[in-house]
Length: 167
Image 1 (cartoon, rainbow, N blue to C red):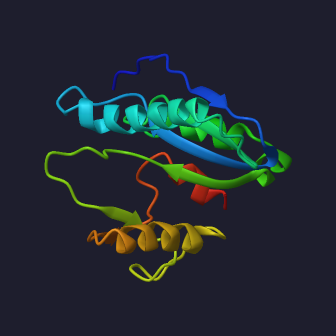
Image 2: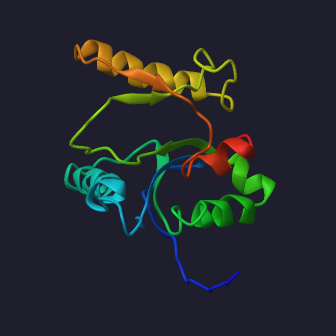
């Protein structure tokens, strides 16, 4: 067994708004050597950067704080998000209203997937409010006439540490 230290960082920026009702919007910065990094996860990072640019250009002042979070070390075991979530104390965790994870959103072989926050698919619901987030995405796709499917909310990306701690 060989152990190697690999430095990694999280990068964050946030808007104004009520910091006691923070919405985290996150994507991971790394990729695997054998994979299409432009999709996994250049696509999620690009979308979040564009979201931040559009909010700034439109001079939107959100009611709730938005924290744009770019996680390091996802492919190495969710290292950045684990460090972030488990590094918060209970009062900091209580300020997180929602966490939205964007991973691989520009595949050449796409499927519209919505995390199963309600537990309808797997029988296990996510943290409080997860069902409401799922419903918001479902309504949006339905209103646009776009097919989608639920995907297990099983912690396999940077949202994992959030659901494990009930955020």
